[in-house]
Image (tube, rainbow, N blue to C red; front, side, top):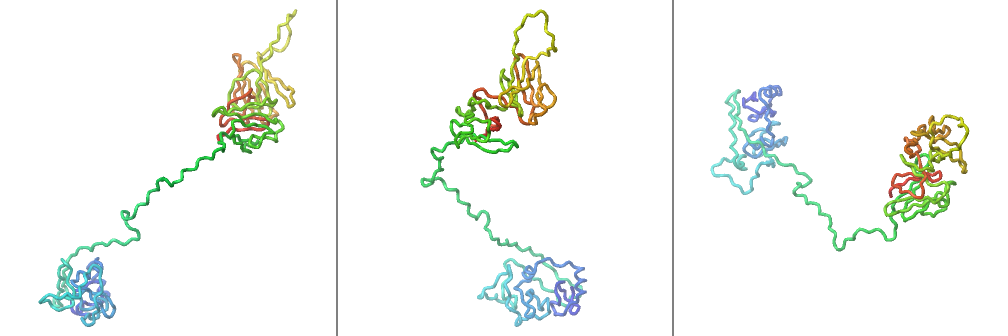
Length: 394
């Protein structure tokens, strides 16, 4: 903006004339700001463009360009006697103490320090007689070189790599092998409670493990079931194959299945029912003078005999050719009072001289009594007395 007193041009940021020190009005500064955009150069860059080291005001300690005669902030004259030593500015070279001015150079504050290499001399400011409309020519300058900020961590290339893991040497201790004499677990027998939860676990480590009420502590001991004998069954390993052998008891060992072919005389456990499936006995033909009258023969060829607790026989259910439904509701073999039997529990099929049984997805399953021994695998269920045992992997 132009000074109202001497007419010299001043930058919009200053508060007083740089030539005569007269104060500049705020409204004039605002008007000049609207007419000319403010300079975007940083303060340090402007001081470097002035052609000499900055001059510090003795009154307000403001840094001014070397060409300023008065402080740009408070208007105090910047004389050689009142100017403080030039402070250090980033990017400006500092003159050495033994540097001497060149011959013929004018003794002025600008000559105290040489200009930076390659820098152009500052343009002379127009005189006051130039008039109010005079403008100071500006010289474009290159932007300052950015200085990388210091960080607390060194670059990735400078950081040392982590040491490699130590290699096993002569002094490295090898992994401890399993102790000799400790038996290896080969299978697990889980006792299943009535609610389906697992009530006990028995680990099979020996070639043979007994099941009963009077077996050892390391065996499958079921002392609370009165329908289990002292030694009821034996688990045996034939190589990797696990088998269960019935001890010849009256209550036997029953194996769960989904579908199976039966032999005449095989026994089933369905809910609380124990049934013996067998063929009807063939009656010899007796010569008679006249045939016997009776109910029509529907073609019964087999029967299911109910075995009662204590050894007696109960109801006898005849089985016809084809499919015979067993369940708690309607069917060919029905047990409406047994809550452990599903409404459609299993299907007994008689055809071509064979008897087959298929479980229909019952809640409590269908079990058959094993004859002698049977191979078992993980997931199989065994019914011993009133206890269900499940074969699990070790």
